[in-house]
Image (tube, rainbow, N blue to C red; front, side):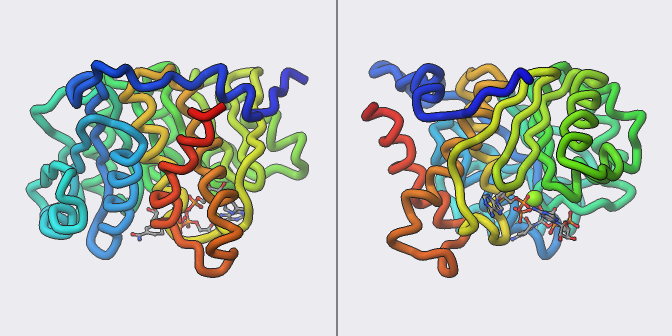
Length: 282
Ligand SMILES: NC(=O)C1=CN([C@@H]2O[C@H](COP(=O)(O)OP(=O)(O)OC[C@H]3O[C@@H](n4cnc5c(N)ncnc54)[C@H](O)[C@@H]3O)[C@@H](O)[C@H]2O)[C@@H](O)CC1
Ligand SMILES: Nc1ncnc2c1ncn2[C@@H]1O[C@H](COP(=O)(O)OP(=O)(O)O)[C@@H](O)[C@H]1O
Ligand SMILES: [Mg+2]
């Protein structure tokens, strides 16, 4: 099988140090479309992880109820709001991001589903889809053909099952995911222990991470990391591989200090700097 282990040496080959002449305008602008009433935290986590992974500018697009939460919890992040108070109804903005994430905490209101449909019909910006964006696609499977090639999907096992149906073995799960990836020309980040990234017949198995990551919001953070790397002009497949490696590495570095129990999704964000330094110092 065409399976590559995502080891430190594979990562150092792909990592691009930040240019000494970089400025916020060259470090990529990422847009995070996320959150609904009660789940604005998902938007906070994803957008903060995005900023802390190197994007020069990050904008969060949230329902109106998320405005103050975003601005107070993350002063470095710009915030755009939907016309609706508690959910997103129309993905409309006048910025030019280099990568867009949609999904964490989004909810599945019918109006939100329609907003996604309209967006998919016209969008040409590299896209990362997670959580409710995946659940919405699962109940509207004919919209999958609207996605641009190399769109990144980051399902956990339940979200993957909603997309591709049940499997009876790991082999069948892999085969079905490869077939799905080929049919829609998308990259699938099969989250789990370990996370496996699928791009058609190419399979990349991650080598970092531990059970400390089994905590609310850790997937929202991964979405932010991968989106940041795409905004910084990494190829989508490289962003996916590097993103899952860094995400897992934060937990490996933190574990001796935090233990499994007390590690939370915000700690992934706190340890991102140390994870990047591990790669840079190779
Ligand atoms: N602070 C926040 O605002 C948070 C918001 N979140 C959002 O909440 C929404 C619901 O997400 P959920 O993922 O909780 O709901 P889902 O219904 O999609 O997934 C939960 C189900 O998936 C199963 N599952 C998850 N990971 C699994 C694994 N590794 N192996 C086997 N089964 C697995 C669980 O047992 C459960 O049955 C999403 O929009 C998500 O982004 C969550 O990320 C948690 C934090
Ligand atoms: N036992 C584990 N070992 C390694 N990684 C794990 C483990 N449990 C969870 N993770 C990682 O944590 C993340 C969980 O994502 P997800 O279920 O979407 O969380 P949430 O929706 O709460 O943000 C994934 O990246 C997954 O690979
Ligand atoms: Mg999730």
